[in-house]
Image (cartoon, each protein chain N blue to C red):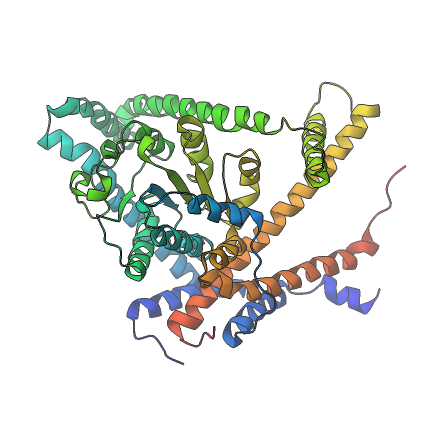
Length: 277
Length: 214
């Protein structure tokens, strides 16, 4: 047997881990750039939908993710909050992931400091509520009853940004930053189709293919898929940040993995049994 | 290089490297990090659920505004919730079946209606497309691909007749559409996993070691 094929077939997977690790570390450590990030029509749809909202609108930002997918969801959450606050749009944050609350608080605090926005008057984070779809459905009846207090424990009757907000009729758009269940799919099923609230979504790459039909059918006005989607959106918002910085490492790792898949298939090709009949 | 002086960042870096050590082989440090994560997560979720949901949505209205806006009705979920704990006692564990039956009744109803409205009706509506768009060849091709992919994939899952002749040919085309979608999903999965690695490497290089160059 060809010695190269023998080596390839018995290659210890840890060499591949090492190579992927180095291809991610080196571009980040030395800061070189391969190619510019070009926004897709999906990211433009996300950006344009928010741009179309009049100033003073109220947007529900659902930060349904936790530290497990921080690398993908946090940059898009940050960029969306930047665009919303830059356009003087009021933000109501909710999280259906228990560990999402500190991340959402962090995003709101950072961006509010950049745009000189005040908690309670410009934004509020209602925090976490257990119940998944039931929370969404209950919000359709009454947001104040579903969230009697915000994430700090302050009654929302005392929060100015919540004045006049009763249910989804007073919400101009939903921005769903989602890692899975409960997330974008449930917001579409429980809220968009029942209450006809416009919605855009930023989702993890692994779940993105699931949401393309919603985009195609017009149930979503824009879609950011993974770190690549977040990077495209950061470019549109005009503030390249975390996701854009990671794109070169991502491209190199992708090229290597694609190359290894090809090599692996070639190595096993001679072993392929002829088709019967 | 600016090493972090934050103890939280150092703990995070240790735990990240501890989990990554599994890539070499299973070891006690990895096991320690894994168990720590499971324990802390469980405690965190219990406390957060009590603070964010049980107290403000049930305990507080029930015990401070009992007669206000029919808050007394909250006694029902309170009793059902307590009944769930009867599972810990073999002699009375049948009591837990009532709240479980309630949950089993409500959730499917909610999800079925959501699916019917959000997926079934809207998605069928979304595939009713013109197969000829004058002056827009790109959209025409896209619409043909979408409708063709939908029909042939549905045929692939039609098992009431043997896949022979035109039916078999259409089913085979459906398989190709499925294969392409599996490939795209796998590509996205690779991107997701690499993104998570990038996030951790950024944390180690920037927050911990302070050597990141942008």
